Length: 369
Ligand code: SF4
Ligand code: SF4
Image (tube, rainbow, N blue to C red; front, top):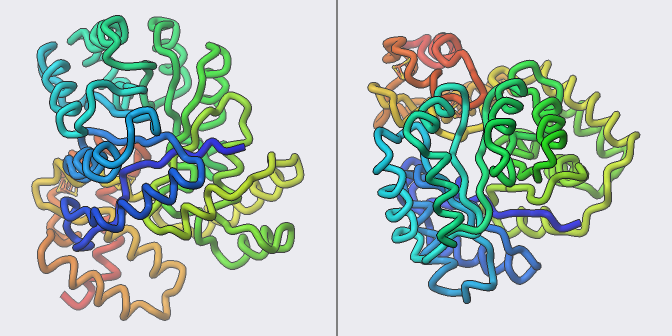
């Protein structure tokens, strides 16, 4: 059961604070290992790492492997479209950045109600069909962040879409905001293949609260927490690809190790683990970074939420997180700089109340001014 895809979203960096500083040497090593172990599917997007992801695809994969050795997925940034012409402009730029003449999979990126309306109005769905007819892309589909009801309407309107990319993991399976299970059922109802994003929830399911980890270790002592999460998504019948944003060789080895189908008992244990995790996670942020692009104050939102979560798990180590917070705030806006404009909340796929959470962050990390 090898369904693993390599998501080029969280590549190793030379400078942890600089999204553009992809460490190409390390990324080459990761690509080599992934392909050596049988991996084929690579996923990138126009906006990932401010364009650094697509350029890394060209340097570490395209220039070093024959085209038939891998499948490449890229995405049209739906929320950036202002005209029909933009569709073609972004597509050509993506081909050039990646250094390829076609994509095996091409997606409308990040559909929700607003972006679906935009794509309809500007003819982006029609554009996708034209690309397919012209042989410039293999399969067409979309990545999705909204309700099951809207997904049903989109798939009814657009039966030509061949697959959907959904956020599926055991923590979001029954969550009222993401509704992974219901969205998956809709995709199945329409006979669509499913690609999974965020199976480890931005790394949040790789390290669990002690009580949840104990529960899973008692069942399978040798299995990593990330492997449990990947196996949950990969065990779903309609799922073809499970994307993981890996940045160490150890993660690749672990994720690509032979995996068994998940049993009913194991699913039940994950349900219990999810309950414990929810109790212990202060901010369920995946670290995707979509919120930072439009922030007028350049606030390092995901970084601050990660520190806040670390603090919530280990309050005695506050001093470490305070130190890291001050370091990041030397070059980025602080939580208290937020003016409440709401741009971040509109782009957050997890629908988080970012402004409110930043107030909590400020109380903890800026109490001394
Ligand atoms: S609400 Fe605050 S954090 Fe969000 S984009 Fe505006 S200034 Fe930035
Ligand atoms: S706050 Fe939302 S958009 Fe920002 S990194 Fe977290 S999950 Fe992504």
